[in-house]
Length: 385
Ligand code: NZQ
Ligand code: ZN
Image (cartoon, helix red, strand yellow):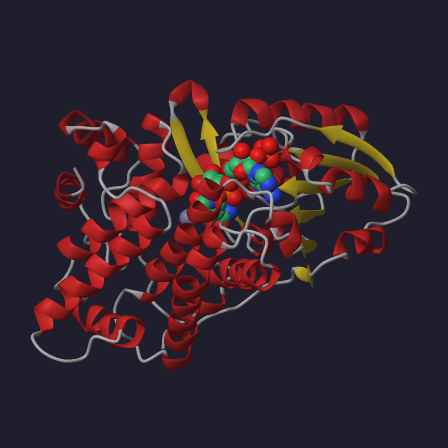
């Protein structure tokens, strides 16, 4: 196991009726900015519950944070925070709202060019406003981590940052608030969480046994519960299991002490920036090809994955690995996602465009050992056509 320094200060309030508890977690004298997206929270009662919980607080609102939150929109919120003297943020929505709120929290206390936060991957953040979240879409893990992904529309760039200063103070996870999700977002969420586990688990073995078992437990649960979330959309227990899986997949716990990959995500971000595929759609296309192209480097873990997650432990090793990857792909399709670039009308020209973007953004040595060069990424993209 590799040395590590684990830090996660986010308080989680899980379950039905927990929104009411936020009143006690936000200082009574705080001037709060409630941030949200395109309006789903007004259709499923979340907006009303939050406003009722904060009846005794001073609350302003900033609506319109879009999926793949844009720098351009978020800078309007930063201006509002500064002009109104806001001192607490509350993000209410999916990963995009939570990520956007993290950016607002960091940018609002900064002088100078805010995009530098993304250029420097968050390293220049030395302070941020405190914030909480009410999560309505289980997927990203953003509700319990210090990462965010922001898109600059003007330059078609999707970049991420990470900082210990932008962990939410608290997050409310009420699974019943996910009943109204469109099935496309349910599938996206399950596939995103699955890919997060794979980016941290399917690397090189370092004898981190409990991290491996946690990771396999999350994968197995997503495989069991994910399809039920599609077929029984108002089953509370199913939604509760999916929701907690998504949080555990990227709250740091399974990633400590192990090598991490993230090359599928890096390529996926370029696909979203250029062609507006949903985040999880990019992962469903890229991950299977990434595993096939890097089969040798990941061989031991692929065999472990085949045996422990898919029950494949007899016969030819290469056959087991291919079957495990094919089942992964089948699972993504079962969750309603497509697994080829051509399914989105993308052809060879998109391969070159993504490679050029990776080069511009310095993404030339990705993966757990930096061995995903542009040539490897090109191979992965070609195999995904
Ligand atoms: O905007 P509203 O009207 O709220 O609608 C949203 C949005 O259209 C809707 N929605 C959310 N909860 C709902 C609901 N509709 C009905 N009922 C509900 N309960 O769903 C749509 C998608 O929402 P979005 O927040 O964009 O989805 P998601 O949570 O998948 O977030 C995706 C973003 O997170 C980033 C992605 O790159 C992408 O920008 N990620 C963030 C990570 C992190 N911070 O650690 C890691 C991930 O790998 C990922 O990159
Ligand atoms: Zn993701």
